[in-house]
Image (tube, rainbow, N blue to C red; front, side, top):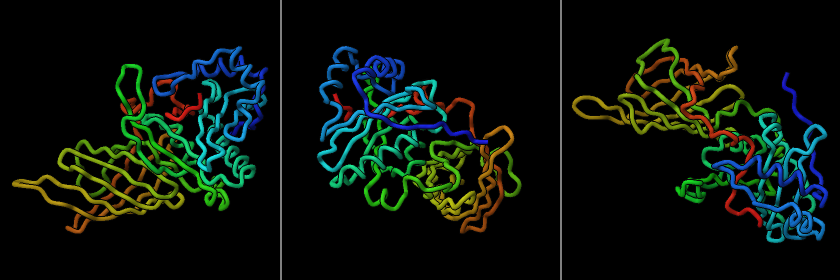
Length: 311
């Protein structure tokens, strides 16, 4: 049975400064910059109300009765607020991130009549936070290229997400089970039941609500992309790719219907029936990869790095 933690938010006070600094330091990773706070200075700011103003607000995240992280929201006076979330390592992987996002939306849209958008960014490798945004009804709006500086001086990209007031009023942030979340997952062929088997096949998904897109390649298949709608456990999609054939290549389009299900080892598998306009068709079983090739860097789960962190 899926046991969700009890999560609630409360206003940060000066007495919280020590554990907030501790969580920030322990949550610091290559894809989540720390704030470099000092306990005494942060306590003074909280006591002065710096994090309880018309422009910005600081929240303590309480999970199962214990302090487990913090959320900072800035730009509240401009109608387009920005969020930063940190969840302590021991409280990650339990669904706390999505519930924090939902509660932030409920509070700030109710409390600020002029607020039209809540936004945040997730590092391109922070798949758990991207999935939390999806689960909380936020929509991916942009890819900010080379916007996040890594410790080695290189730059990485971030995904931008937003929940609008219209989304919130429609209850999108608290929608029930909308089916599987394939975002950030990779699959390869485990079994070909019927039709050709392209060696080296690998498919990688992005998802926004019920809309799923994916890119794929194989030994003689390049530039493949599919797009479809995921309704419960069924994905109905269209695809296009380039097939390398002697003496040249050809463009192939088609469609398919795939069923998503979970195996006993907890990995997802996709039973995929497809056909193309050249008369090709087949059935194959795709299996979620967990061999570490696409692993998220350690400590990434439920961390929300953003280039608009409040000082």
